[in-house]
Length: 126
Image (cartoon, rainbow, N blue to C red):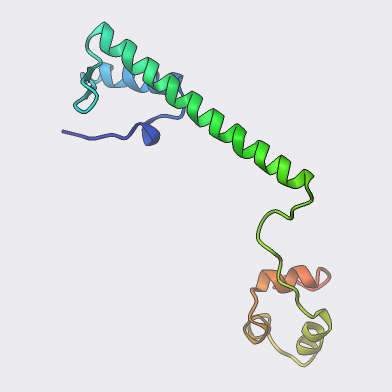
């Protein structure tokens, strides 16, 4: 017996119903033992559709709340995201002029190569 989780199974009610139709075409009926639901019956299919719609609504509401929270924080002037690392551009240029490789410079300054290349946009990326 295969066990599926709804959240990994479908992203929308229409996708969920398409997956059910695909299963049915393959001769597979979906039966949930924990929810006492059997999609081989009209009632079971209706309950399955309603549960899928409720799950989709909940996912949409959570996404909207997150977006509203980000807008609110941004409006209050809060800085969002991970803070950027500050690096000394002059030191990077001195090390590079001394013949140090990009990898060596990143290890010496304890930052990633991406941080170094962002600090020196005119520098070659290789």
